[in-house]
Length: 98
Image (cartoon, rainbow, N blue to C red):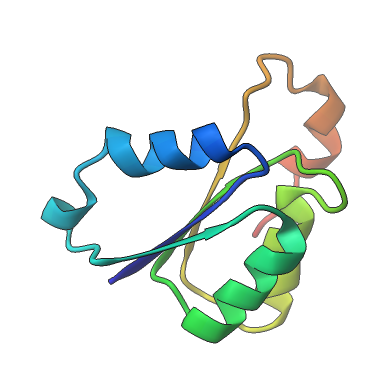
């Protein structure tokens, strides 16, 4: 299985890869992207079983990317992460169903 990590911070991507024993969960292929644009390309090309992405990236948010790939028939699992403790600025996204 494939997993894709999308975050604009290289240390976060590395941390996500190392904190979990992905191989024991059946993941054998690992991909990384540094922004939503490159992440979209990897998702559409590789069709990973799991996408882990940051909610807040420079040009396009993780929420926007998730909506975009859903509109392009990507139906696999997406986990959206945030380093923020205050979600009031993201309240408009909470009501979305991805």
